[in-house]
Length: 214
Image (tube, rainbow, N blue to C red; front, side, top):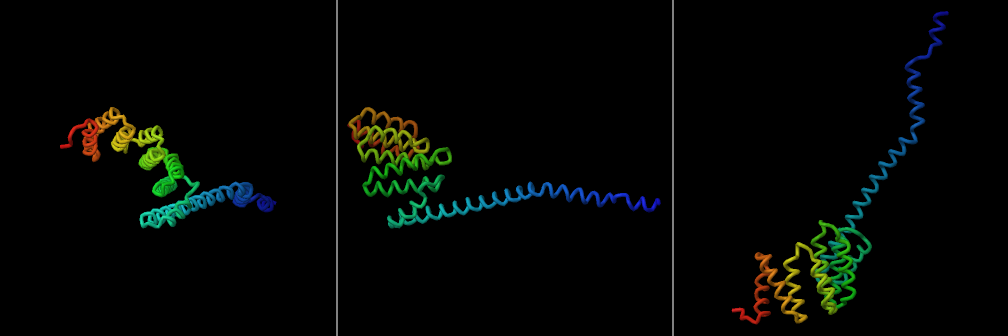
């Protein structure tokens, strides 16, 4: 009888296996969800990388075509970045603005410069933002909207502050305001003595004050 009783006692190892199996079945859906989530993340990262590579390729092709004089090819490639975000899209808008400006299509060019400026928010894109503001300023000057041109020059940022002052002096001189032109030239010469624009600033200052450059 003792032997029969022993045979009837549950095997602890088998009981543990059954308990683990039951637990696994209960949680298999949760585990599959985790695995699926990881796979989705990997797929998204791959797609993001692939998309970024495609955008960089379009930009390189567009920039190369522009510098080789193949303007239409440049435009076709750069338009592939329309509606995108980030550095490549900002540079694309900047180049499209340059192309249209060179073609004398100032109102269309201005839209692209403003778009490039809007896309280049943040410290890391400060250089692109400065160039976009410069392009917008030149375009506003071409459209004879000198007030907006002044604002755009002032918005070029710290990296271009010496150039901004130089261009503001030209703008004021164009408007016949020699006093303001001289003031910003003085600021340029005093604040940025090492700037490559200083020699030209000194020449302009002499012309504004009626002095001989010799």
